[in-house]
Length: 307
Image (cartoon, rainbow, N blue to C red; front, side, top):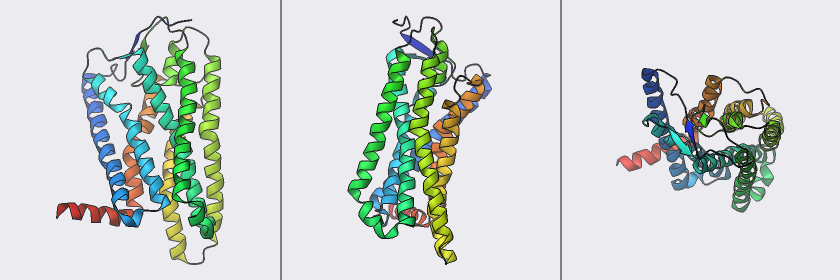
């Protein structure tokens, strides 16, 4: 059945008092600037510093690129809507935003699994590491994560936007997300919710299990290292990645694995705000503050530019 709706209205935080809206707008703007600066600095540092030309930092640079794209696909539109009297988005633009958003989201889930595999090879299979994790392999794994993300996203976006929307066009969210759009469809959406659940299990659950298995092996290998300095170095290279995994997977899976039990609009917006904006903002801090090589490279880059 074709839809009768040509545009949607993103309600975002319009139900909140104006002073609180101004505070949230400032938070979005500042967090977005910090996200661009932090992740951009990591990309620049890894690209320019020869000491960081290793698979681990190759993946870190690509993770920062994921974070930049993840926020850019939603936040500029949110900021525009705060300043607009009618925060609308066309039907096509909404579909494009959803497709890009879920392509990046699923790709990042897979990519975090790739990063766990890299750490597993470095710590558990050090003699084979350089031969297995070649630049060609790193590029193939990176491209593969994007291909998987785009295929999963294409299926979900097509499924959602083929539904009939013949009633309200007011989305109780700050971007085109699956749960609020399904609530607007004037048909039974059980199959759609089931497909979202299956997509999350395949696109996020399977990589998460691989990450879990990798870290069980990594922890076992770390415990067998005799020197405390060696154990500390191995742990420091893994702790940052593990923190990102817990933050990203925890919030994303909580949102999309609740089949038919989506929470209140306020709760869903806050959870989405966390993985759309907060995590990309703090990830550069997680990776830079807990990594000596990254801190030294950052200092070197900044001092060179200040001279």
